[in-house]
Amino acid sequence: MAHLLGAEALRLEFPTRVVFDSVTLGVQEGDRIGVVGRNGDGKSTLMRLLAGRMEPDAGRVTRRRGVRLGMLDQADTLDPALTVAEAVVGDAAHHEWAGDARTRDVLAGLVSDIAWDAEISTLSGGQRRRVALAALLVGDWDVVFLDEPTNHLDVEGIAWLAGHLRTRWAADAGALVVVTHDRWFLDEVCTATWEVHDRLVEPFEGGYAAYILQRVERDRMAAATEQRRQNLARKELAWLRRGAPARTSKPKFRIDAANQLIEDVPEIRDKVSLQSLAVSRLGKDVVDLIDVSVSFPVAAPASAAPAGRRSEASGDQRTILRDVEWRIAPGERTGILGVNGAGKSTLLGLIAGTVAPTSGKVKRGVTVKVATLTQRLDELDDVLDEPVRTVIAGLRTSYTLGSGSKAQELTPGQLLERLGFSSAQLSTPVKDLSGGQKRRLQLLLILLDEPNVLILDEPTNDLDTDMLAAIEDLLDSWPGTLLVVSHDRYLIERVTDQQFAILDTRLRHLPGGVEQYLQLRASITPDASAVTNAASATVRASGGSEPSSSGVANGSSPALSGADRRNAEKEVASIDRRLAKLQSDIQSAHDRIAEHDQSDYVGLGGLTDSLRELEGQVADLELRWLELSEQLEG
Image (cartoon, rainbow, N blue to C red; front, side):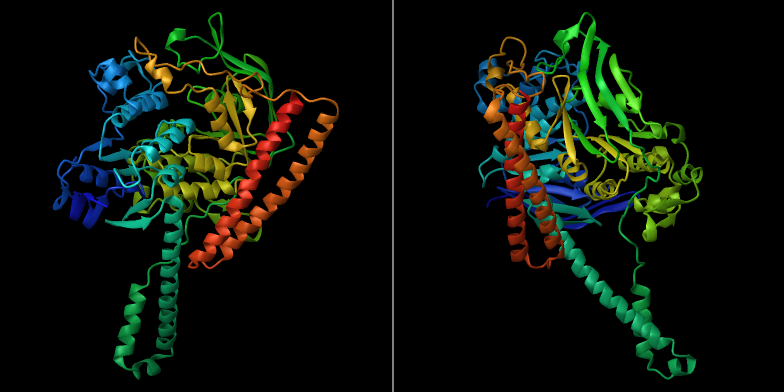
């Protein structure tokens, strides 16, 4: 593979710390590289150095002659005075961009619902992000740098972007370097991973899953080595402690060697392990939404609403949710999907009690205590000028982590350390914390209030992959009712047991999970030809088929009757039994993988293939179950 660019002995130092020290790496044609690491370790800085946006204090970045570099920044760099058309295709004539297949695909995938002549200043943050991404992707680049490209994209948009990047170049052409905390996206797109940590950049083969496997093996080997060192240190300490007379009779070099071992042994500290932080118990009733509809006054002309995402309006009212029937059970773990503006936050507001229904009824259990992790960091508004230590000092003095024999009494400060705060950061004013640190402090304040219904509205914002794993470890053991709205597919599939989607103002259960949601959305999404037909004014959706009132895409199966119905009911019952058996087999397969020697890659590969086969059988059965259920409901 031909060399595109490289870095030699890079060093970069800020006034308070050294970011990189003697970093050497390269980017070849065909590379698809994901960059991961803790917040603040230098992922975005590394990308700016490679792209030529920053100069290192020492070392150099070299690029092959003629290499074209394109970069998407985290910051919003669009000129607010431009129109969408000017920002994306510049002054190119209509026939020039409309005749290019890549441009049509990008416009259809990212900006088909945004008015082509709308000014950038009138767009929402998510729309501006999609316009900036479209403006980059319509260009012809040898190397594309993407800094958090999935920010403000919904599940559907992230899936489109992954597909576009997989097919943008031939397998041995072009290069991609992407910083993102979206682990599903990393696995879909990347063939290599760079981990930025401790002033260096460590390369790994494969996407996120392969990186985690290699990192676990690296840590396991390091832990084994460290255990041997500590055992030797304890042995030497025991030898030294056999009384002063005995000690003085030993050779001095033995004492010196033991003291050196003692000085070099690092402090032992457990990994982030958050479990069962809610102790309040729920009764039989949690929250019931009974025939609930929500409408709001129309704040803008209908033409300004995104095409394909408008709800019907009656007079001056716009319907956000219609005829929602949902009885939430104790301990239920649910993910909510939907495009931006579909009504996810409105649905959460109904459950939390901050939104009143226009019609229908919301019934809450007597013992229900709801807490919401919002996107706005509201819980920190009153403590921005206070140090973190002062904020947590006003909380309870101890907190029980875990239950039964494993229960531990920890202070809020100790819990905060488990969420990644160092002792030095406890003296930092809240306003000076990074976005990820504020997010973690916000979560801690909510959890210490011990709710039994936890609502998470985009909980992954500003968190790096390691801290996301820690938060997921907490959510995995959450004992109450959990509701999650997130565009992070990995998180949704990891911590929730079922998914619902808001489609055409109605709440739809998704037995097939995120994949079923994407299929339903694809059935109502316009194809790329709609973009070319919008030359005169606006790039809009071309009017794909609307889902039926039950949320089923067009072409649903006809209703059954008589013997056919009885046969279908029998098959559904059979599928239920087979799914239960397969779920048990999948759990056993996970256990076998966990217990297997992690250095035996061949054996792990065979076990993983068996697991994927079982999961494939589950997916096929769920689709068949869905088809039969639609026929029986009809």
